[in-house]
Length: 512
Image (cartoon, rainbow, N blue to C red; front, side, top):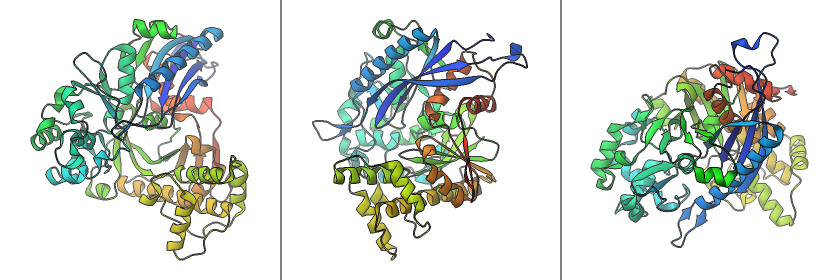
């Protein structure tokens, strides 16, 4: 291992449901036992090299799908820009990693070509499918193996929708008939970069088809599904090899090298579920909870093993896999979606952008605790007229309606903080872990008012940052895999602390 790693760079391809981006992570400092006591702590500098819009489109049959070609063009442009920047700065690109959202998947045919663009998890074809599956393979039987919360759009239910002649109407059945291989979204991009088909375990754990204890495909669930839905009898033959984060998937194909100007760079499996990458870069202590805060908030604990109890299932907590054999024990909370939709509605009403910092400052001056709405209610799931929906939820509580925008924002943020506090408290009780700190990462870590309210609601210190946790976790896994960094999760999180400024909010004391 080289002592000087300041010239090592890693490219993080980070795909979200509304946008994608390509980040260059440059590792500075020394690594390894020969570095000496005076060597600086390693740190990572992140530079955005490309950003492109993403979102589901409606096909000719009215189905919601992801446009793979749009994603692919944006990725190639970003890789080209990352290569140019690396050359300007004298940085050697040592790896590329891809993370993305979960559950959605693509089919490849015999020739390895894309059968069709992947369905979006918001497509309506899965309505009622989970209930049908549970009649044959009960939810309790599922949970005892995969440990997943109930979500109607889990990969398993999407697959049943594609082969069923009842619920789901067999939507996508013709595509399934042509499919020979199934790849989740980040694995599809890795395949296009390298030509190798794999399934990285942190994302595969969201399919419903993985055993949470063994981190392998569940033969029992696959057999029972195949027996009840004959179209899925050969599903296991279409599933790829499972790999752990840090595995070298392959090297850039010649056509990708030609399109990007990059050399024969290795592509590494990272913690490819974007939340798994974010948690890997969360500077957790031994008793810390996390809130990965964005459109959704993922609130939970990092554990050494899954919690598969009936109480955990009843609370709808999920056990998704993490880096280094860990489990992300968490619950989905609605997140900043409610606030963002309110702001979008007001911008449309005004015909001009909303001054969000000013709105948050005014909301901070509003009295708190007047009322709390259930932000996880189904009425907040879809876009459109969110201020009215929040006001309606307040009215159902029998309290005075918020008369101003700042007052409504304060209700939303109070309610978000309370929802996170409930999730932390429940996770602590269900897992038997005493939590002493809450770590907020992602875009929500920049919302000072929300961080302070979360500290008040939990009664615990809140440590905010990093904002770019997902990209940072992606880069850290790559850097360790090629020997530029070393050590366990604790060591990687020390690099995070050396790379970003963290802000601490004490209950009753504000932030620092």
